[in-house]
Image 1 (cartoon, rainbow, N blue to C red):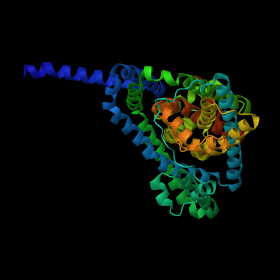
Image 2: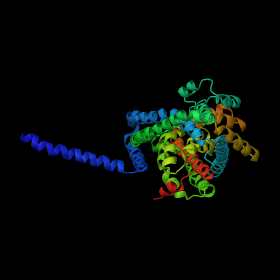
Image 3: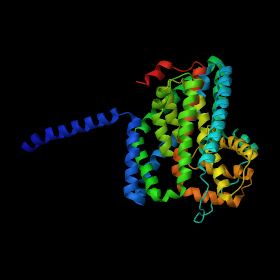
Image 4: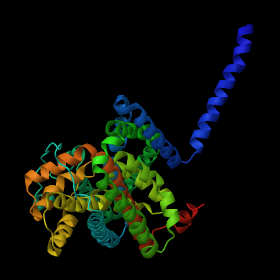
Amino acid sequence: MTGTIIDQPDAERRAGLFRRGLSAWFGIALWKRILFALVLGTIAGLAWGEGAGQIKWIGDIFVRLIRMLVVPLVFLTIASGVAELADPRRLGSIGIKTIGMYVFTTILAVTVGLVAATLIQPGAGADFQNAVPRAVAAPKDTGQMFMDIVPMNPFQAMANGDTLAVIFFALLIGAGVVAAGEVADPVRRLLAGGSQVMLKIVGFVMEVAPFGVFALIAVVVGANGPETFVSILKLALCVLAGAMFQTFIVHGGVVRLLAWLPVAPFFRGIADAIMVGFSTSSSSATLPVAIRVAENNLGVSHPVASTVLPLGATIGMDGAAMYVAMLSLFAAQAFGVPLDLADYLVIAATTTIVAMGVAPVPSGSLFVLAAVFAAIGIGPEQTAIVVGFILPFDRILDMMRTVPNVTADLAIATTVARWEKELDVETYQRTAG
């Protein structure tokens, strides 16, 4: 009896401490928890080395969780967003502005990549002696890319994670709901409810993000280590400088000059998406978080967020475009291929086109290199050597260049929402607090 009397207060005290600890943890902004995990994961990776691979499964589970949500979220948010527009002309207006903005920022990203690589000269003196050639697949035919947008079986497209085909089918479903009028109201409500359920699930999954990010960063740092990164340091500096310029100057400029909004609330509001994009190296995996922060932090309406962001996760590849342009000059400098103004224009045009076909997955940029390299006379054998040289370090470079992919999507969503009067400015301004 005495033991029970003594143990009961101890148990209650421990339970109280646990509750207070949980309250304190969840009381910290998510982006701060993720940033803390990034720092801690870097330290753990440096200290643990390749042994950090033992916790890779934790990061893999986190990535699987968010990728699990991508296809149903894309389908439900786009279909419900289009259905809520009610007027098909609004969809056309949003679509034209969105695609126009993505082409505009992609061209700027290519320009940033070319200028940075010209100034820094990352390929000068590159040593390919220890590079193991890695062949990349032949680029997909342009006509086939457009054909694949129309799925023969939409359910198979969903199972395969074919995002463009899912977007196309979702647009048709939403347009069908609008055309059917009042009789389709139950379907409209079902899509809207399903979209809200998916966003709630995103919120649940994001609470485990700090643990997943910790594991992902620890594994990457442990596998590469600072000493192995020295051989590619100039290219890494080039990518970092370009990514920062594209993110803060170009995308910040889009928000300030085209959306007429202060920049600080924008970057504060999208911090969660930036952290997830950086740690997962995947625009697609970041999509659920991007939709959540766009609606909750930036005040972007559901119809605009659900239309612009899934499209952007597929074709809005500013970071990839910048990187491919840099690698084109890197290869030319390394192999001593002379380039004139016409070659620069060819690189810019080719990269702008192929960047929109980059898969929104880690190292997706490497699969389009052959198309751009061929345009300036760099053959398959040389392309394989460049890929083999870069691949061991590409995950870290990919983390850097995924950030401008994410910020481009959110800057364009904010700008289009502002133009369409679909932005809650009060919610946006509240993020500054």
